[in-house]
Image 1 (cartoon, rainbow, N blue to C red):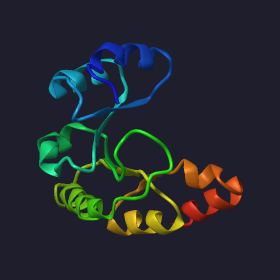
Image 2 (image 1 turned 90 degrees about the horizontal axis):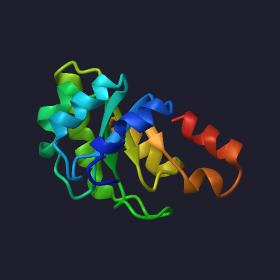
Image 3 (image 1 turned 180 degrees about the vertical axis):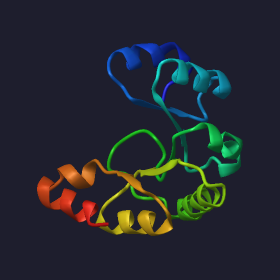
Image 4 (image 1 turned 90 degrees about the vertical axis):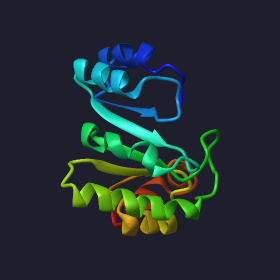
Length: 148
């Protein structure tokens, strides 16, 4: 999470990024940021923190390629999944489906084989898992998540 992400989009795109995710809470003009991403031929991702309501990004849903719902507060690895975010995942999936949008729904934070299942059942189609994957048998843990 960085402030003024517009300053870095071109550099990330030039370095080979094909999707860039910016936090809705960051200091920037979201419409301008989306325009810069499109000009640099990258997919547009928008992330929201656990305390941020879905209404903050609802009007952007038809302009983005991916919505990332954080299920921990950004900061450090190994935090516990915030279950209060599950209704937000369900609501986001309902919006995406009811409006026929081609938007991936990603969940990041405290993902393991149990919380990953909860997130997928709520509507996520992309899971981000760090600590769960690398603490233990990487191949086995990856397999557990892929089967979800």
